[in-house]
Length: 160
Image (cartoon, rainbow, N blue to C red; front, side, top):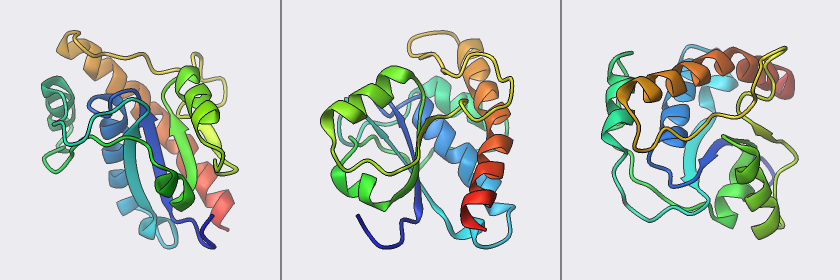
């Protein structure tokens, strides 16, 4: 493990829908924060991702509707090096966390579901919208947006 983990890693299945949206939303939120949060890096990856796939069209459109883009995103699988750089890992579902625990031995101390830190947040999982309507992607995006303040609060405590 590196001496100073400096990256937030968002994990989903194929790294073309949820985790790229989550990472982009988090980067946007961190850009509005003071240091040291603003300097945190944000990555996304998938537990069964291919290499180099573009994000799903509906993921792009759901973010475009809130003035964000995924133009530079290409899918990538989770690697041990990513986990070494990770200050925290945020998974979309419990199955993603289980797969990380099964396949990797160098997990950082902080591995959560993205919605797990919301007080009385209801379902901590973010279901996969792949192949569904734009409305399903927008609901997915909104559930992530709802989680961002709790993640920022967690990071403020962690970095203070």
